[in-house]
Every structure is written in structure tokens, then in C-alpha cells.
Image (cartoon, rainbow, N blue to C red; front, side, top):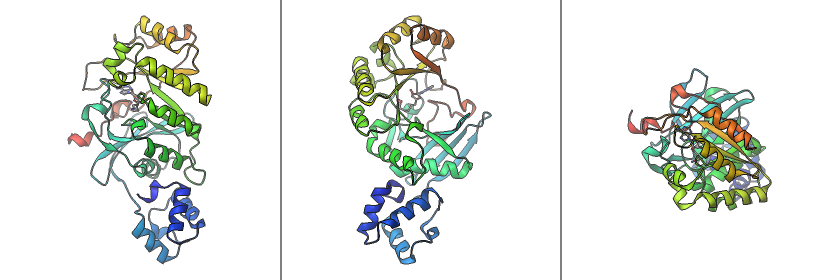
Length: 339
Ligand code: SAH
């Protein structure tokens, strides 16, 4: 456990367990997330003895920045080294409304989706909460930009690292901290169904996005092995229940793969699956990778129109950072392979 693994109430308990006054926790929290101090020694509101005690009991961790690339569209990709030498990537994207950060939740990914570069190198481990919090803090530090929204869509399946991801969300959402509004946080999952109920119970306004990518089981089994465990009809049921119980609109992500899932019949099947649900479909132009033969669909507009005609809410995802392999599905912690 480190300093950036604790939300304000955890920090209060910890500080009290050291025999200090609770209000010190808020001072520490504010100096970390508002003043952005980078060591205990900069927390000059604390007595030196207390700072020394904290140094001993609660590590102040750092991530090492090993590479930073800037795309022609000003998207930036950051490669960080973790304390065990694993590498993770984080992507900063410009929008009309501000900057969003695409955060990784695991080192590698166990989901093995056939179209995704991240899965091709296997899974190493879950990220600790502090390793996610530090992605936000360090990108703001190095880029000197204020991040206004966070998408948990980098490498990894966040619902397989549930507790750490939820803690991360609570920390970046805290008003005394980075204060990113829950409505500006989106978690994307490939559909780990047992976690839907847990997520529902968190009762926050965080957006949920589901990687659907297929309109029938046969196709989804080929694209996403997770479908063999949690088939489409169960996934749709879980989405339905989630929407009913939370009253929140869910995002459906659908990558368009040439000749695979972009046919008229797929649009019809998809519309049938989603009819009556409070969802919007985000069509994702496929980013080709060297790990497979899938090609980008040339039918994005046609597919978009078909879904519109069926009465669905549809958008097409804007692309970012293609030239620096920072786009969706291209992240893979490149230096892991020594490339
Ligand atoms: N594991 C989570 C979050 C990480 S993936 C999930 O599956 O949702 C984030 C999004 O990028 C997912 O929708 C994923 O399917 C998509 N994606 C993966 N590879 C892609 C590629 N090559 N081109 C476009 N999108 C891709």
C-alpha cells in the first residue's frame, strides 16, 4: 500500500492509526492533489517527525517516464516503467471540450480478443490503484495540461481488476483531489457479467461502455473469447438490468471490421438486439495492427445509416494518434518486447 492507494477516508483512518489528528489527512490529500507536491518533505504544514514517520510507514511512489511521443494530431502517448520494470502506456487526447486520458488498468490483457494488439502479448498482472492514479498525475505534470475526462480503455480488462479500479475512480473523483466528475469518467468492459451488479451498487454516475463488436454469438465467439463464458443473450440481459436499476444510458462499442461484422445483416441483428434499450452505439473505425489480418471496414457510413434507420442512437468514434500507435487497440507496452 502506498500514499496514492488511499482515498481521503482511508487516509484519515491511517493517520489516526498513527496517533495523529484526522484533519492532517485532508492537509496531505490537498497537498498531493491540489498543490501536487512530489515528496513528503514538501508538505511543510506537517512537523518533521511526522513526515519522517510517514516516509517510513507509507511509501510515496513514483513512475518513471521512459518515452513520450506526440502525434500530428497532438495526441500524446506516454510509456511508464513500474517499480517491477513492467511497462504501461497512457494516451492523452485533445477534444473540443478539453483533454481526456486513456488509462491502462492491467499490465497486458488476458482477454485475447482476436482483433486487439494489446491481448497478443498475454497478461502479466493487475495494476495497483496508485499505478492508475499516477498515470493521471504524471501526464498532467509532464504535459502541463489539465485532464477533464478519463476513459478506462487502455490496456487491460478493468472488471478483472475491479477493486483497484473502483478505488482509482473514487480517488480521482474526490472533490478534495483531482476532482474529475463521475460523468466525465468512462469504464469500458468486454463484458465480465458478475461485475455488473457490483458496479451498479457503487451508485455512481460513471459511464459504462460495453465492447460488443458482434451481432451474434458465432461471430462474437470468434472475436472475443469472453463470449464463450458470457454469451450475447446473457450480456444483453445484464445490460438491460443495469439500465433498469441505474437509469443510466450505456454505451455500446462496435468496431467495424471489413467483411466480418459490417454487413447489412449485422446491422439488422444489432438493431434487434438493442431495440428498446437506453443505449447509444459508438461505431469504432478499426485500427489495423500487425498481429492479425482484419481490415478496416469501408462501410462505416452505410452501417451508421442502417442503424439510424432502425431508430438507434449512433455516433462514430473520432480517431486519435494513429501515427504513433496510440489509437484504440494499438497499445501494447512496446518496449516489453524490446522493439
Ligand atoms: N478490456 C476493455 C477495455 C480496453 S479495450 C474492453 O474490452 O472494453 C478499449 C476498446 O478498444 C474496446 O472497445 C476494444 O474492443 C477496442 N479495440 C481493441 N482493439 C482495437 C483496434 N485495433 N481498433 C479499434 N478499437 C479496438
